Image 1: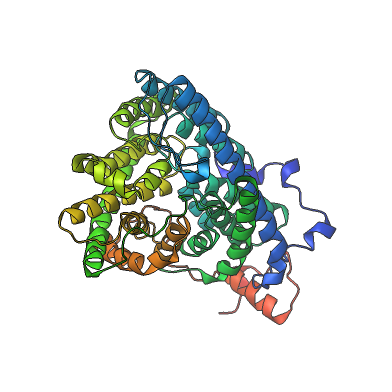
Image 2: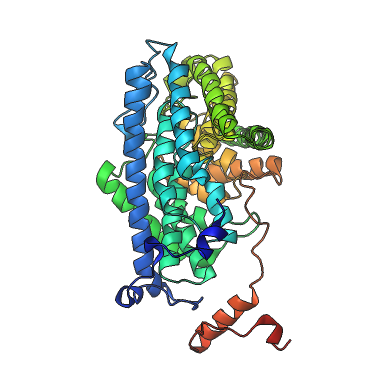
Length: 499
C-alpha cells in the first residue's frame, strides 16, 4: 500500500482535524521548538493508548496460547512471573499437533494481514523507524488492530517472536494518527511517533525508563536524539501505569534474591567473556534473520506463495520447538527459568548450547518468512541462553561466585544492545525486568565487549547513520518559534530564498 495514494485521495472521517478547543492542548503546528508543557497532554494520551494496546496484546496473546498451544496441542511452555507465576516446561501430550497448530496460526494471521494491512507483516519496529524518517504522518490506524490480532495468532500458536514489535507498531501508529489529525509539522509528527514507539515497548516490558531511552537511541546508529527524551519519559510512564493497573507492577522476570556471596575477580573475567560470546550471537542472529528475510522477499512474489512461506516455516519451527525448550512462543519464560541455579546446573551443556541456536533459527524462520512478531525480545532470549551457557562453563572452572542471574541479564543486554544500536536503553530495560540496578556495572562491561565484536552490524536497517541536517522548512519553523512569528501555511518557495 502506498501512502501517497492515501494522502492525495479524499480525506476520511478518521483523518479530519480536531476541533479548535481540543487542538489548543497540542503543540502548535509549525512550531518545532514547543516547550515540554505543550507536549504533556499528547504524551499522556499516546502513552495511555500505548498501555492499553500492550494490555490488549498481552491478554490476547495469553488467550491464544491457552487455547491453541495448550488446550489443542497439549504443549505448556515456560511462563514468567508476570504471566501468573513461574511454571516449568511440560512436554506435549500430543506432539504431532504442535507443528499443525503453529502452521494453522501462521496461515490465518498471514492471510488476515495481507488482506487488511500488509504493513502489519514482519516485526513492526523497523516499519515504525522507517515511517519516522520518511512519512511520520502516514501510518494507518487499522494497522494497530491487524497487527494486534496477527501477532497474537502467530506467537500464541507457537511461532517464535517477541511482543515488543507489535507493541511498538501499534503505539507508533496511534502517534502518527494523532499527529495527522492535529496538523503537526513533520518534526512534531516524528516526535509523536517515536514517543509512541517508546511507550509501547516500555509498557509491554514493564520498563518505562528503558523504553524512553530506547526511543531516543533507536532512530540513528551513531547518535541519540535527546530532544525526544523528556516527552518519551512522560509517555512511557503513562503506558507503564496503565499496563500495571491491569496486570500489576511486578518485574517481568520476577524479583530474585542474591544467589551467592557476590561478585569476585573471576566473575568480571567471565562477564567479559560473556559479552564477547553475546556479540558473536548477536551477529549470528542478525545475519540469520536477514538471510531468510531477503531471500523470501526476492523469491516469494505471488499471493499464494506469501501465505505458504510462513506456513511452511511454522511447521519446521513446531518440530524444532519439541526438541529444544524456549523456541515456541516468546521464550520469556525460559529467560526467567535460566536464572535458577539448580535448573541451569542440571541441564546438559549441549542443550544450553542448542537453546540460543534454536531460538535464532526459529525467529529467523517465523518473522523472516513474513510472520507477524517482534525480533527484539527473541534476541534477548538468545543472549539469556548464551549467558547461562557461559555461567555453566565457568562453573566447571570454578570462576563465578555468583549465580546465573547476572550472566543471564547481562547476556540479554550484550546480545541485543549493540546490534540494535541502543546499548543504554536495552541495558536499563534488562535491569528493570529483574528490578536489580546493581547489574548496570557488569552489564556495561559486557555491552562494551560485545560492541567490539558486532562492529557495524545492525538489526534495524531503517536506522539512519546520523541525524540529518534540518531542512530549510524546519529551520524556518525553528526560527519562527524562537522569534514568536506566526507560522504561515504558504511558505516562501525554496527558489525564492536569498542564499
